[in-house]
Amino acid sequence: MSRLTRDYFIGLQKALHKKAIGEPVLVIDMPRLNRNIDKLRADLPADMNYRIVAKSLPVPNLLSHIAKRAGTDRFMSFNAVMTRQVLDHMPRADILHGKPFAVAAAAQFLQDLPKSRRAQVKQIQWLIDSPARYQQYAKLARKTGHDLQFNLEIDVGLHRGGLTPGPELEKLLRALAANRQCHLAGFMGYEPHLPKLPNLQGWPARAKVGAWSLYDAALNQARAIFGEAHVTNMTRNMGGSPTIRMYKNTDLANELAAGSALVKPSDFDTPLLRVFEAASFIAAPVLKVSRNVNFPAAEFADGLLGAPPSETSIFTHGGYWMATPVFPKGLAYNDIFGRSTNQDFMTGPAKLAIEPDDFIFLRPHQSEAVFLQFPKVSVFDGRKISEIWTPFSVSA
Image 1 (spheres, rainbow, N blue to C red):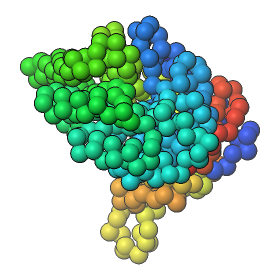
Image 2 (spheres, rainbow, N blue to C red):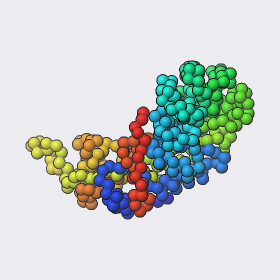
Image 3 (tube, rainbow, N blue to C red):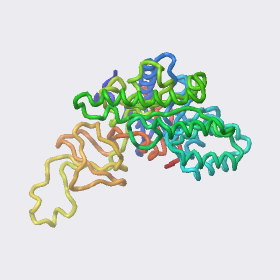
Image 4 (spheres, rainbow, N blue to C red):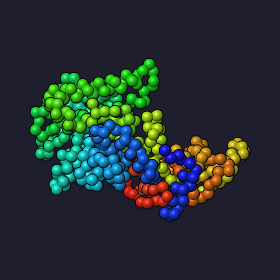
């Protein structure tokens, strides 16, 4: 695993300067990304499928690269705009929706899809979390004439919605079995809460066993109605970046979804993901540097503030990202001065070696929202900026 040293960031800075980049950019470190992809694939059981979470990696070239290296055409999308964008760039993509859409969004998507691409609808699994939503979508299928593929969200303990094994699930499964336009494509059981539970008297272990037992019970209900072969071959999705390394076989899930782990923003610095490397950074040019901290209107405070702190002050081009500065060392936001999306203010050690036009580097806390804030993505190959990519358009 490559460490984030001073030499690393100096080399990255030189590469940005050589490419004549003078505005904030998102940087993807390709060697680190590739090692993360290879580690993820190596960790998965041989017969486990991998689904790329598009919202966490919302750059078409990035998704294409990961899909090719990881050997998958499966994607998870979280809104209709991104579903369309993924299909635009990867027409054969197999898409599972990671959250239920309001039926109005689904209807608009189907209306806007060109007739020449009508067949792509069968590549989409619409997430159903309740009998009421199923009824809405069944009506939509009748109205539009589309055959729709449904994936049922199983509540395995997160309690953010979804179905639980029992009479309600059985009724819905039987309704699907009797409907010629609505098809059971699979189940999804999302469990990001498991690694976040406090380790009190074995609570996390019990919660994991409980989650898997609920999912297994739902599978058994499906087997009783659809048969063993259908359940064996349908999408049985679980996992996410926080939990993907928990699965050692395909007894329950036959595919796992993850995205953030591959670029590893700082919110994913967890024990389970310690083998993955940070592979995404924000590079922001420094606009102004002063060797003290001059608060606004300090000259009119008549000595109330005392002597200015002996720190280095910098203003950056842009700011207020969900991110933490990592280079140069010692930079910190200032609560008194406040934050700004235009020119963010930070302070550092008095003898900080930094000048205007240098870059500071930050680690995003997450990828899904932060990546979409940048019109350009600089791809660092370890020596130079080898490509410039464009993210998807902003979508909710």
